[in-house]
Image (cartoon, rainbow, N blue to C red; front, side, top):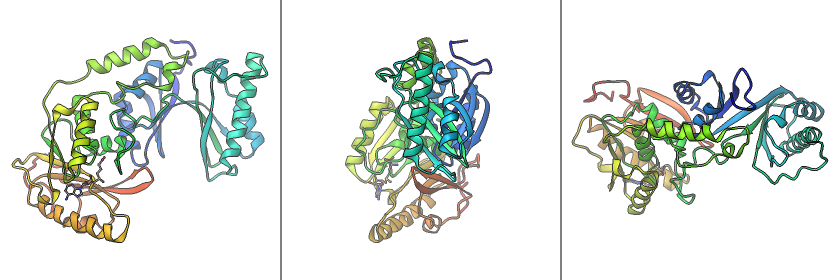
Length: 387
Ligand SMILES: C[S@@+](CC[C@H](N)C(=O)[O-])C[C@H]1O[C@@H](n2cnc3c(N)ncnc32)[C@H](O)[C@@H]1O
């Protein structure tokens, strides 16, 4: 057992986009995590230091892996101060630790987030100052970001072990327009049941996120294998845990050939998607082309379309996006391919010309969307989607 590791294990919380708690819970169970308990927008679980590294390196659906320091009622600033001061910060934070504070409050007496930030900072500094017998903390060492949530007057204090959010895999530059979060793209590929068998196409591929996440999942490549995490600089988490987890993740990759197609009407999008796939190390698994989704067709029967077509904000854009969906729907219905289509348009089914077998509410950041699913439960692909 590593230094600072409590006997019962570490209690961690994986935060996620709303709607992804189910897939994230399953993913964590597959990674061997214990006492997995989904909540709104996060999943709690218990593990050890190796598991903390594993969750960061391997999770496809989590936004952050947070170490839970404690939870207590906080209806006033006094209660908040005392609750925070009672937590064992010194077990994790060295004297040099930098500890910025961020968080949110919902349905609670304490509504001012900046006010709560100030109090939490003060209380943590007080605790550390007393433990290290100093009146001033330099904060010039590794970062231990304190993240707090106050929900219905209960405050939870965590340390952010991830640093940059986990959807930042490192393959997509910041300037792409209207892209899908990598975590959401990975989740809809998972919900669509794609595991590297059969064919997958995204005919509105944009920057290629869906196809890239599909290729990463098919290969079993850990999405965080090439990036760094805040807790890699924490004294309490042994270097060996990160090295061993990276090596295990690499050893778990599959060799294979996959049939993933990504196309877009915009040649610049296709070039960008190809470049992103190259950076992600999966270019050879994806067939890129410039094509009009209104003429979607494939010669094969066993395939699934996973896609997120354009959605207009203004009236004119809305009308042309609706017309595009209608024409794409006609082309798709002429094929036996299954479909998982993510759209914020509540009228998408009418435009596609078919009632979905299942619908699932998901959030792309703050935008509420539906995943419209057709034929995904059917093992026999030909003519499987109910139309
Ligand atoms: C919402 S974006 C897709 C974003 C993508 N999921 C990503 O993560 O970057 C929609 C894409 O549809 C493309 N598009 C618009 N009309 C099209 C058409 N007729 N055929 C194919 N692609 C089209 C746009 O160029 C845009 O890249």
